[in-house]
Image 1 (cartoon, helix red, strand yellow):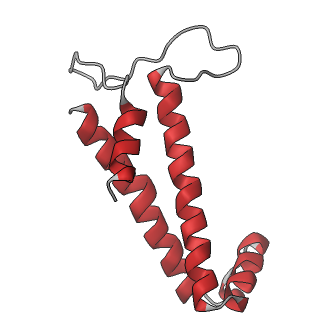
Image 2 (cartoon, one colour):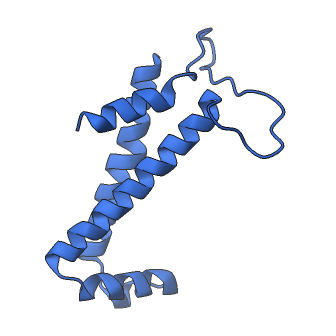
Length: 115
């Protein structure tokens, strides 16, 4: 697997699919169907929003996801590091010698800019 393919698959799975799941959950779940108090509160808030505000909420959720993925890729690439981190990460796939990380954040951000 090439780094570009890895980034695209992570983006599809973590960003696109999760946003679609959240949209479906918020649109199709009644408050009394949720057992978790957090979800009951979130659904209550969502139901009070108008259509424009709902779209804004999903844009915010998407941007938070983009920022989170970008930050994680920055850690894997060595652009930033964790507190007390004593070495660099090396992301590989078993039986493949080529290292995937190094440019993951740049690849991800390029894809996002092209949208």
